[in-house]
Length: 608
Ligand code: F6R
Image (cartoon, rainbow, N blue to C red; front, side, top):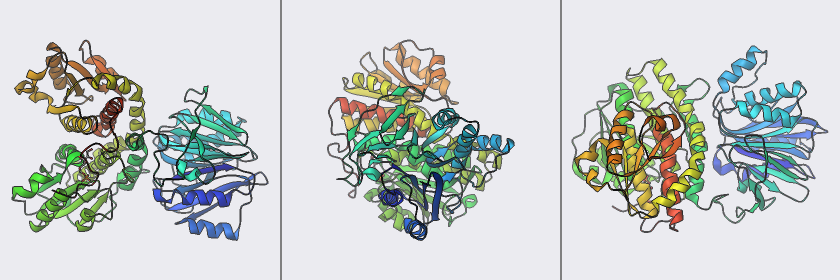
């Protein structure tokens, strides 16, 4: 994840920016840069690799400006070279950026058609050129930014510095965090409170869609509709803790909100965002085309990620899949295919049952592939090949961002397998990849349903049982929803494949029973609607999760909806994870439960 720092100071800011960037090193990066105003003129220093390389350049040719922006870049679009390092600049402005500009290709083509010449492979340069175009037409910096932001799609944070403007920084947030820090006659911008901790403990987090204009006197906030808004200042505890809850009450909330960013980052590790080609970051020691069978094994939420992936591998790669919870798999003594791949999924990489399953699969001569979040873990070390999820440390016991990152990796693996096995044409692979590229932006959209979910959570908090239903990959999401709710709110919840309802569970339905229906617009939607009608006919209280148009088409009276963005259905599980997580979270908060450390649970389950 990239790091952003901006300072309007009273002394040379480059050394301060580099120090702040050091505090963001934990996010991972592969190049870095700083821009300041030298006698009013934009000047940059950038370097490939670690911050010490940038420091060496700054020692040779110091920057003296009192206004500046800096960045650590974790490459997404274009290689980690000095040329692609941020800040990106034109004569009129410099910009640093975290996240993904999803529609950069079409914007770039438009600008090139108007004669713009691009120097880098990055999506960020598109932003620089768009703002530059407005400034060249005599717009002032604020107007230029207000004209450009609505053109950008995706999940990102931005910070701008302008030539000749020594008392101006502009920041923008859409789906990736950004905070303003208040000093004494100085002002700061940072991608998290940790970066700002050496300067100030008074900060304001931008809300999604906000942008902010900073001068040394203070900050003026605008919302997505360009209205001036007030945003509250708060005290940050980042100085005291390495891992900070930031603007959130719980780690779980923070981790839910980090998903646009970490899913984008994970995606960029598996997909060339510029060309839309899948590019696995490891050398597969097996031939996808020759595999007879895939065996997936994991526990809890990681198992549900595997269950979604079963549908994807079978559909896109025509690869038969067996899946078990690891505690069953390890004792099942399953005969395994001669040329088989065993896939283990684990956030911690230490789960005892999953590790034991891995060892069994190895004894059975399987190729062993692991999707893990902790690269130094036992499961990672004992696998032939590791496919990392780049979710960053997950502190809340209930898994959220690790889950969506697991799904992201598994989607990329399924597409890669499909291409290698000839089950997908190159064009089909690219179409799927471009659906994936839209996911971080859709996650940011999905998070906007939080207020509505908070309302519904008050109702859910009053019942003792909840049913979740869905079909296909949405069945797996129903299971995940039920697990999330019971583990943190302690309300009993069960999930069923929607078609199974009439084979027994429908007996439970009465007017006290909430039924959460996960129903993205996909090929199974109409079947799910029939099951929903069966619930409605028996007085069940339906909460439907789908996009607005689809909810309208369901034709069920008395239905409460959680609206998701309209999207192609293939990777809906990644986006639909957000409402099930938020519903569980807010229900637990209403009930006053210990959200981050629910009773009886541990983050890393190293016993059977
Ligand atoms: C649920 C949850 C657990 C874990 C499970 C596996 O929210 O977090 O169900 O998913 O204990 O843990 P890992 O992924 O570390 O193997």
